[in-house]
Length: 369
Ligand code: MRU
Image (cartoon, rainbow, N blue to C red; front, side):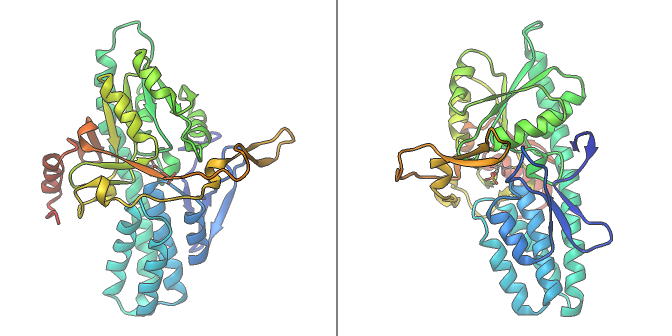
């Protein structure tokens, strides 16, 4: 997608080098800063502090981290150690494990001398596939968006889509998952308007989704997270689409904290609630999202403080609570499949249920474990 009219990706190979640069998402939207990543340690740090974030992008970046480790030492010990180090960066998005498994599968069958080149190629393949995958998610989602738009009474204004967090191109290599159908609907000339939910505490909606939609001139309005029920009740939402970090084989979906409340509001008001995801976000090994999906616990400082631009143009962090207030910071919540209208994947739209996921598994020719 574009930054100031120029096509960019959230992670890019630096031409002529075996290194990558990432758009640092900790300083957006106030600064556009590209950072070179050239070591395992730099990748670990970038994922941990969320310079890169979003399930597909975490996986794609980790694959390059694996390459950097093997470039420096391609022994069996490093194959194991680097895998563990990268896997420990963030617990909820299963795309991380998926991407690392892909690289490990390729390199373990090779002689140490051939491992780094193979890891580089595999990381590149993961990134390229992510772009195609998300474009396909966008195309399948576009059909749903069209259907909802057709049902809308003529003259009743734009199609109102609510999203949460950032499941746009910034959370992927390109296009996004939940936002891909929105970009494609906008490009197809459908009159869309997006309610961008702020996404406290880190504000990925406010800082990232609002920024990337703005770069593409997609009409949008920022709302605080607590607006979802109110807007749905007043008939000001036609459709909700969110991303996911891990979906179980029974259709439960973990996504950024606050997603579940939106799903409840959608159900209460009879609104379609879709989760958009690549197949790499499905954890086929688990069936109970509430019991089995690990929920990241983040620092209480993200709740007690906010970061923004001060009047002097500098980024500043300020305390918003009485000093010493303790806070809890669950990074994600789980929306049971029963509240999800459908899962938009690169292979089509599937019911968020054991039957729906079995259908998808059969289509992929994969045995569910
Ligand atoms: O903590 P984050 O910002 O990595 O969480 C991101 C989300 O929850 C996204 O909705 C999800 O990863 C999908 S990104 C295409």
